[in-house]
Length: 241
Ligand code: MLT
Image 1 (tube, protein in one colour):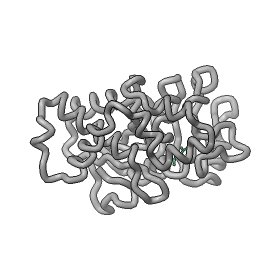
Image 2: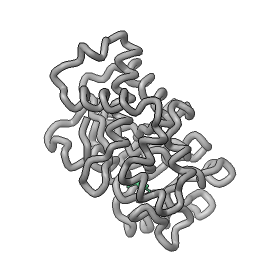
Image 3: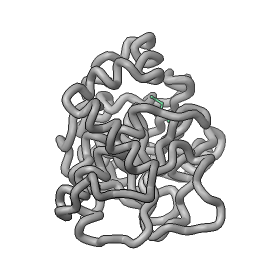
């Protein structure tokens, strides 16, 4: 478990790297693919997003831009998963750039498998890990501009806890990886009050100031979407089938 993309080791390439941005990029990506989006293509840079998406048929694309929690002017969407209805996204590719989450996905794009995880699709991520049993797994919390994120760490703990449960590994037997032990402990503390956790977290508070209370409610749900976003080519995620 790494708390921000900056802390991931430079030289290794894991078998599986999982980007987490509960509020809200990976929640949005999972929602778009569950609602029938053709793919989600991620960018750290807004200019590059515009340049690449220009080559796409206007009826087959949607552009989403978020900075500081707000929508970037001129883009059709910001980063609210609640805007990603099937009427809007079905059959279209979402080109998206957010402050932290899309940068995390770009940072880990060389891993053998790249997944996007949030609380809402936790069970699908866990099923993949239990089935494939990759030897090295990074779970990378997106944080906020390089700093620690409470909700991403709790989500990492939720994934690790659930993998242990599915594989009959007693969590108290896990030793030697302090980040995982810490993330599981944090998840156990907040497990029954994930909405409270999001209200407590600094980015949750930022979003509340932007009137995004419904986004927090939506993103606090666990295992409600049966969808696993997986990278097909660098920066392009599709639904795993
Ligand atoms: C991010 O990438 O930092 C976020 O997803 C911010 C947000 O839109 O909530």
